[in-house]
Amino acid sequence: MHELSLVQSILDIIENYRKEHNFFKVNYLKLSFGELSCVNKDSLKFAFDMLSKGTVAENAEIYFSIIPATITCNVCKETFNSVEDYSKCPKCNSNDIFLSAGFDELKLMEIDVEI
Ligand SMILES: [Zn+2]
Image (cartoon, rainbow, N blue to C red; front, side):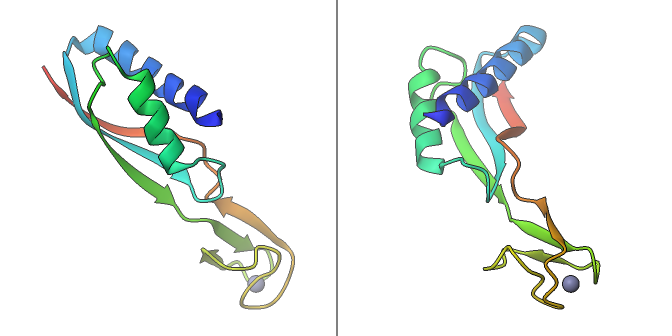
């Protein structure tokens, strides 16, 4: 499961942060990932519950923000969110487009701790 290693790297970041700031509990954390990344929210939650046991992040609330898939058209220079067809521009029908957002891997955006 891909999510296990993602969650482990988030927990490593939290652990490093704990060493610097010396807190004893994580209240919540905010994670973000792209709509097109191969991240599954339920698997993520499951992996987190499993791997955070015995760490300062155990029982922390997790909030997700999902970055919508965005394409940008090289012809009309417009960007579009969450389109159904990623192969052409919804406005000018050009296929000279590229994915400009939404494929980001898991990122830790915010962490709230108790000191
Ligand atoms: Zn276009």
